[in-house]
Length: 302
Ligand code: IPE
Ligand code: IPE
Ligand code: MG
Ligand code: MG
Image (cartoon, rainbow, N blue to C red; front, side):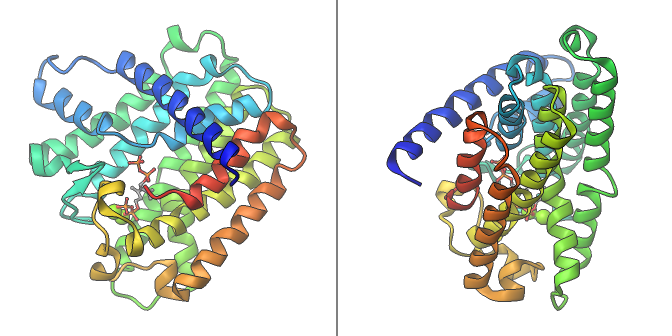
C-alpha cells in the first residue's frame, strides 16, 4: 500500500469507527439499567475497542454502489452486536478458554461464566431487536430488509458461524485436512464478513450483478481474514492485538499454518486478496475504500 493510501485508509477507518461507536452507544441501553450486571457486561465487551471491521465493510459496500451510509448504519451495528456476542462465547472456558480479548480480561473472567453466557445471548437478541426497529428502518424497503435479516440469521446460525465454531471445536488435536479447514474458516469467520458486504450492497439498492461482484469480494476477504488471524496467532504482537498468541498451537487448532505452513498460508491469503479485487474490478472508484480494506485485512497487525 502506498503512503497516501495508508494515510487515507487510517483516517477513513477511524472516522467510520467513530460513527459506528456513537451509533452503538445510542442504540444500547445505559449501564445502570436494571439488572445492571447484564448491561455492564454487554457494554464492557462492546466498547472494549474492536476494529468494527464488519460494520465498516457493510457501510463501504453500500457506499460502493452509491448508497446512503446513514440508512444502513443500524444494520451495520447489528452485525457488530452479533460479532461481539460470538467473541464472548468463543472465549469461554468450554470453547477456546481465553483470558484476554480486545486488550482486556474476557467477559467470563470479569463477570463469571453465567453472566458472560447471558451477555452473549443478550447481544445476539439485541441484534435482531435492532434489525426490527421500525423507527430506525423507516427509510428501507421492507422486503429488502426482510431478505437481509434472513441472510444475517442464516450466516450467524448453524449452517454459518455456529457450524464453523462446532467443527473448529471438534477438530482440535486432529490432523488437518483442506476440506475441513475450509469449512471451519469460511463458516466461523467468512460468512459474517460476506453477509456484511452483501447486506450493505443490497440495502443500498445494488443490482444483482453488483451483489455478485461484492459477494465474490466478501467471500475471498472473509477467508483471507481468518488466515491472517491464524498467522497473527503465531507472529503477532499480543499487546497490539489485545489477545494472546500461540494459543492455536497449544490447543491443536486446525489452522492454515498447521496444514500448509506459514509461507504458503501467507501466499494463499494474497491469492485470495487478488481474487477479491478481481471480483470488484467492474465497480468504479466508489469501491476504492473496499479495495484498500482488502489489503488492510492482510497487512493489519491487530
Ligand atoms: C476476531 O475478529 C475473531 C475472528 C473472527 C478472527 P476481529 O479481529 O475482527 O476482532 P475485533 O472485533 O477487532 O476485536
Ligand atoms: C473466532 O475464531 C470465530 C468466532 C468468534 C465466530 P478464533 O477463535 O480463531 O478467533 P480468536 O483468535 O479467538 O479471535
Ligand atoms: Mg475459536
Ligand atoms: Mg478464539
